[in-house]
Amino acid sequence: MIRFFIASTVHVDDYEQGEGEFVNEWDFDVRGTYDSIESLIAEVSSTCGCGSTDVKDWGLMVDNGTITTNCLVDEDNLEADQRQIEKWKRGEYTLYICDIMVPIQIVTEPRDVTEEDADLMGIQVW
Image (cartoon, rainbow, N blue to C red):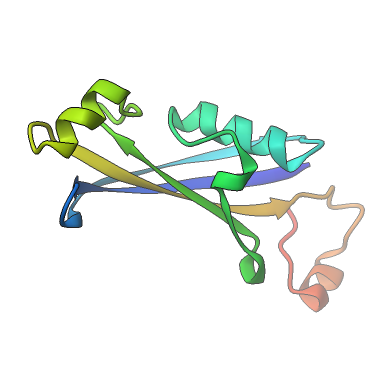
């Protein structure tokens, strides 16, 4: 089983100036079984309400097992539509950048890995 924690930070975004003032943050703790990275990313995108389901739009930080992406959202934290984006580009509408980070953990049954073995391997057992 794979367990992942979705952490997101939201900032005001300006078409010309880029990321601005911090607005809010939110998170989800999700467990599930996924047979591919594509199915995991689809679940994250669905849970967040934004973010591409295309693996090519996600970054992977190999050193800590985290996948990342971002998307433009409106004041309700919903992914911006094309009309909103066009108004935002003209400076007529405020959009926000939602940065999504998803650290991924493999979850095993405690009987499979002892706490001593987990300590030796540097992993957590859930």
